Length: 371
Image (cartoon, rainbow, N blue to C red; front, side):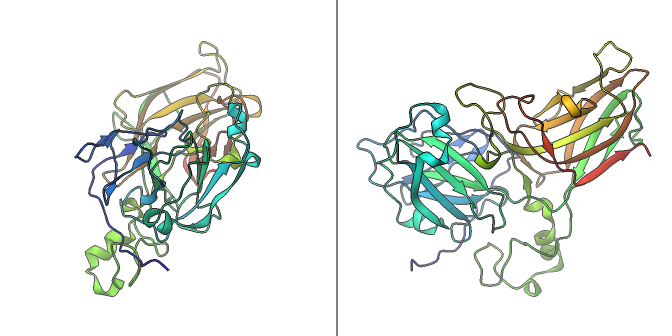
């Protein structure tokens, strides 16, 4: 059994991360790629891999390294969690001839069985026999973190990965307030901001364990009240991830599309009392996101059975460690349609495009109700 190592922590001040793969050359310094730190350990360069990353082949050394190494970092706290995060790596055992073959797990064999990152971080694994791999994060869904998949082409070249771990909040509270006077949203036209935060007190799944693998590895009773409050405050440790899960994927990967590499994300759903018409009709609705938003969201109108709904859809993983959730928008509705309710929560987008497959949305909170 390899010797356990203490988790370590990077200090950073980023608020969001893109959903694709970020790769940067590191020559003698710690480089930053799109606000996300790339780790360096024991002289080994690691490439930071975001959820749903798909690449045409990752850069390698000359000569190529003999093994691939991978390590796990908690997205918010930036602690190394190799000992407690789980991973499985699959490698192709047939020739991958097209994009859809690449996303078909039946074309793969197990290269590294479901286990912690510890052996991968310390001993590595030779993946050079494979042109394509799938990295499955928490494949048994038994840890703190949300499961997701990374599909990557490595072209028989060993490559080192840093895989972020995403711990979802147990809930999210908030409101929609008028930008002019701070009054609650009432369905009238105007400029609004949606504010939100995670629970400030959590009794379970703390990033702390006595003699454990977290930075906070003493008994809670050994810490001051202020530190205990910090540890229990989910805003300091949780995030809503934008990620890719093969189990939720129905995309045609021979084609490109806005959601080819995103299946799971955070959404705000606005329910209207009738089918939404064209923008100039008497049941039309217009929503324009503020250009002052730091968070990256898109507006989508529902189709089919959801033609009375509007969705504001997150395009990136976000956390609230540096402040509360803020998303501003301008709202206009015609005379013969009204807002019934506004919800938020996780959603699944299964196709290349928003309209390919009906969205599967799960409400965790109602942040406005007309009743």
